[in-house]
Length: 272
Image 1: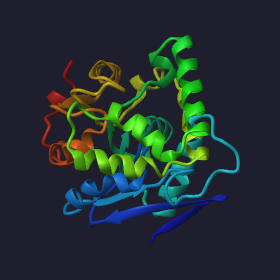
Image 2: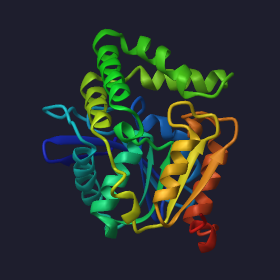
Image 3: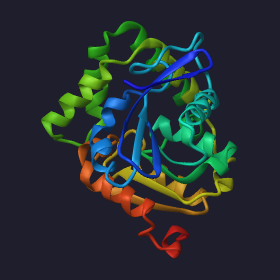
Image 4: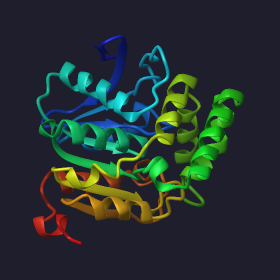
């Protein structure tokens, strides 16, 4: 199993394929295991690398909780350097999108193309009261619930109505692996998140994807990212929720391949 040391952290990742690299960043309740259909479906054309963020999967815990996604992006910089890549395509889902956006804003020369799926604005997308309530609930849940209980509580909100039983079962299995350090680090980072000022300066082509039935970060949120990021295109996946890449992997993968292979016209990328 491949690992890369970044300062005092050991980062685990899964990798398949050959060719131009695409680095994938998971969301709050997931890890690299959730991307197995992308590792398989995209690896004929690309080298697909899915990491376990600090505090997740087989990666080690940070010594102290992170409080900003900038800290995750700092680790990502060391991770990509450790892979000896000068440039990568970057895909972030949910909180992974926040890491990807921070990284791209600070290291634009290292990102060829950016994909953000079911992206979150965190604190910037809600009132102060709602933000505080969500942080309190997340901390309470990870401190008091067994991970399997937490997974059963949360996964039903992440999927479209009447989900495929196997997709639901797999999502619960993966989320039951969450650990307090990782989950709390993301909870605090979400509560401090406001990237609205960096969106207009993202210089690379960006694909914004959202499940059409996403209740966690609805299409209206993705429309805001599309509005503020200059060189972006928005695509939705019918009949899927927040975990659209698991619910309809073939559709999701096709969007990624079309984007990375330049199938979308410049006019479409710049559409408003």
